[in-house]
Image (cartoon, rainbow, N blue to C red; front, side, top):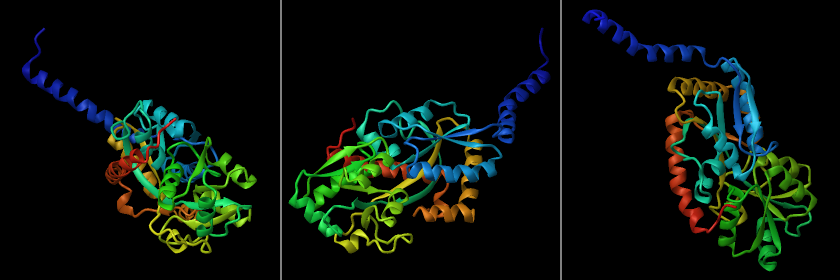
Length: 329
C-alpha cells in the first residue's frame, strides 16, 4: 500500500519528534524512585560524612530518598567501577575525590576511563589535610617531628587509607622534602588507621580534619600542622605548615559528584540544581564548616567547571605520582 507523500512526511516528522518528547517526559518524571549515591571508601571516613550531609538535603530537593552505599576497597576502584558500569539513568551516582578520580589513574590499570566514562555533575567542597601523630611521640611540634624522623630512619610509620591515597602521596613528598624515611602502613580506610594511631601502633598520619580534629581536641593524638596557607577556623591553635617550618607543603582533598557516561543532560541539570540548592542551605553550610570543609565558589559548581577542573588535576598530578615511583597494589 502506497502512503500519500503528505501523510508520509507527517508521520516522519512525528517519529523524529518522539525522542524529544521522551526526553521531556523523562525530565518531568525524574526522579521517580530512590537514588543511590556510591561512596568508594569505608564507612565512617570524611567522604562518608560529607556524602550523608549532601544526601540528607538533596532528598528534599529531589523528592526521593538518596541512599548512601559505601563500597570500599582497592583505593576506591571497586566503587568507582561499579558506577562506571551502572545504567546511565541518574539513579546511581558517584561521590569521588582526589584519590579515586585522579591518583588511581596513575597507579592502576583501570577497567574504566576517569575522564570519558563519567558525566560531571558538580565540584562541591575541599579541605586541607592535617599532620597528626600519636600522643606518646616525643615531638611536640612539626620541627620536632621532622628531627625525630631524621634521627630514627625507617623506624617511624605513617598510616595511609590505601596505596596511592593523598595521604600516601603527600607522605612520599614529605620524605623527599625533609630527608626522612619511614614506613607506610596501608589500611582499608581512615577509621581503622585512626584507631591504631590513637592506640600508638603507628606514629603519624596526614589526615582530614573531620576524623582528626575530634581526636586532637579530646587529647588522644597530637596535631602538628594544617597543610594549607591558612589556619582552620575549627582549630585556630594548630599552625599552618608555613608557620611550622615547611612552607608551601599544601595538600587539600576535594569532593565532587559524577554520574555514568551517557546520563541525559536534563537529568544532570536536575542533579546539579539539587547540589546548588543544598549548598545554599545554611544548615548544610554550617555542618560542612564544622568539618572544616570549604564550599567552593558558585561559578565552580557547574558540570562544565568540574570537567575542566578534573582534567587539570589529572594533568598536574599524574606526572608527580609517576615520578615518585608510587605503585598501586
